[in-house]
Length: 194
Length: 296
Image (tube, rainbow over all chains, first blue to last red; front, top):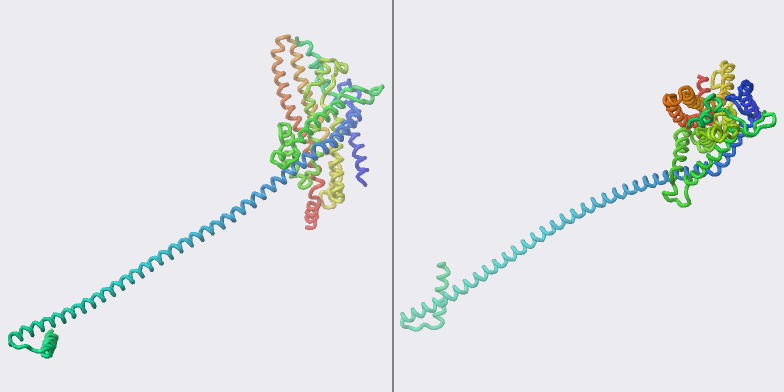
């Protein structure tokens, strides 16, 4: 059975259904609720089909494509927004990592600088200390040398003086050689006596 | 003062107020070339176009792709869009799924056409043209197209053909398999005739429901208005005072009729979509489930 024959059966059936009450009540006084003829059905179908064809072209088509466009745009925008949010998140994470890295580096640099400064300070201090020690040593040596020299000169003077005094006492002049020998002797005694 | 209104309210017979009357007939009066209903059908067609087409221009995407081009602009466009979108997304997408957009033009046409026919019936054209202007032998020109069983039958047959043809094209084997409802074979002698009967009862119910709803409310309204007039005739001005009661009742019923106009347009469209959905959606899954159930 094809749908064409089904269609025919359907139309006949529906028409019969519609006709039944009209036939039954046709004889009443003009107040028939079912008043009408098949032409009114035909008019309804023609009106409906015209409306369907016209609206399909001028209304439903544009409306459907408008709604579909809008849905596509909303979907696209949402996807884009999601993508943008993901990208932003990724960038944020990246920047956070970079920031943490930079902070770490800065801290390391500060630590390094502090260590360097401390080391330099210690070096300077050591150098200074060494220098001071050297200067002190040199000064002591100088002092020692000067002292010895002075003492030597004092002994010499003293000896000369003593010899001179003794010569005067002894009323005789001692020669240069004797004098030198006496000086040396007395120096040696002096040194021993120290 | 109220005398001129008497013919308008047509108090004598509330039914006389709502039935179709011929305008141009064959000489013997058996064929109505043009009747009130025909006029209202034509008027409804034009009005529907005037409502929907200008709105469609504003709903459709504009030339650019800006936000303004993407949205409906203006009250009319938003009204039409709200209704169309509701039917498409909330009502028919759950029933028809991916195929919704394919069937929407037909379903939208049903809804708007029936709605406009129903709504135009609430405009007292018959009373103005017949009662006041005396056109068509005082019967007037106007009425409700969907109040004629001939019109609702035609719409129901159109819907019936639409869902059955689509069902047959979509899945011919499934269409006939559906008649068994997946029942065991020994139930078939009962279930198949019932299903076949049901197939033809559906459009019958559609036609009758729309017709009865449109007729009933209008008859009630005419009867209530008739009471006002009867009271005036019986008690004079005093009757007019009492007549306020049925008058307010009639106004209330009129409000209800506005709701019914929308509701019946919706029900007709909804059931058409529902019957269509039963035939074009999930045929295979359903019958596989049934056959699986039978095997167990």
